[in-house]
Amino acid sequence: MSNMTNGLQKNLKTRHISMISIAGVIGAGLFVGSGAVIHSAGPGSILSYSFAGLLVIFIMRMLGEMACAYPTSGSFSQYASDAIGPWAGFTIGWLYWFFWVIVIAIEAIAGAAIIQYWYGDAPVWLTSLILTILLTLTNIFSVKSFGEFEYWFSLIKVVSIILFLLIGFAFIFGFGGHHTSGLANLTGNGGFLPNGFSSVLLGIVVVIFSFMGTEIVAIAAGESADPVKSVTTATRSVVWRIIVFYVGSIAVVVTLLPWNSASILTSPFVAVLEYIGVPSAAQVMNVIVLTAVLSCLNSGLYTTSRMLYSLAERGEAPKRFMKISKRGVPVAATVAGTFFSYIAVMMNYFYPETIFLFLVNASGAIALLVYLVIAVSQLRMRRKIEKENPEQLKIKMWLFPYLTYFTILVICAILASMLFIESMRPQLILTSIITFSVLAAYFIFKPNKKVPANAALENKHP
Image (cartoon, rainbow, N blue to C red; front, side, top):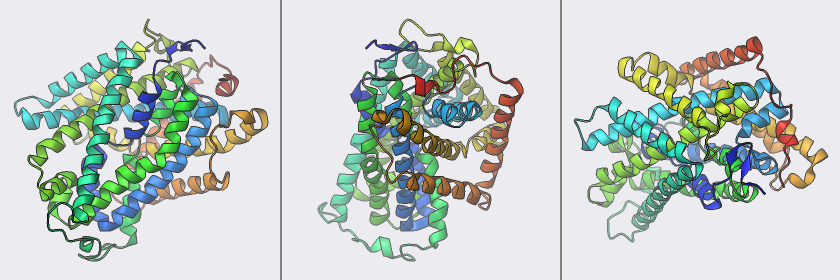
């Protein structure tokens, strides 16, 4: 088999894909953002992370089924185009691109803020610019260099979480030579659900966004030397990844410390490390969080470029974004995502409370729309694969079609609930405005198709 597919090199190794899949879900949202969920739901936050994680497990199983059958860098955007219609692929592809462009800007700003912790005189805008440029160069050099950087970023995150869990559970069960309250914090201070089950449901809405990034493995599969093996391994390991890294970490935090502790709201992992007695806990966590931020920034640059390349390939974006360098990298597509992120960083500098806040809120519910499209696409594509190429089903969604229908209903329920949650309502409204604008653009401009419908289904992979 050639090492090129549609111009993109297949230089990502199985170890790259495996590590990206293992740690892709670990972001700054876990290390920092989990504090707000714990402070709201108390020990019940364990249920919030468990329910949200279960939903993502179902989504990844569906995506893995399609990606194993038809690996492509267009991933769910291509599948949506084939299974639902070109309008769906166009809309979700551009929304996903927009989402990651904003994430790149957010992560660059977050990384700069962490560096400013050590170097107080470093301007945030300049540091953000430098970080983005450095990782852009990494992505432009070759897909292998992206894979290597992401591999080591991911490895650091994985080792950090495992050490955190080992030390945490050692103290919980009294092996740390430190007085522990046992399981008292799970039932004290108002009980396991101090603010009622509604706080758990609210937590699910918040948590679901922190899992965004698990789907990158399906996009990267298009440039893997062995896409079926890579996706199969990643999909089958998603269950223990979420249970161990997310649910396990939250369980350690709420067991060791009172859920209403002010230090948890600020930084739950730092609070636990300080409680255990780890020297320079804040410094240690800053290094780990910076690694998570750089990893997310690196992945975001990769993801935006491949999605834009796929859109251009289908005639839904300018042709220039299909241009490939000698190393098989869509340079123009990579730079485009970077360029708009620079603009977003500038918006944060000049208009942090208006334009930048609008951009962030406008991308808020896109994760749920992506998950919804994946589920609907799998529902329709599965039947076609069973009829035409049943041997392509290396991975199958459990209890099809019942769990798929269940997932679709749950996602719709979460989207509907956002209307009644005051803090979430602006995100849903602004995301809806952006979505309808992109959809209108499709019907107004009617993109000139360069590939036939059902492109993924026609592109057979051995």
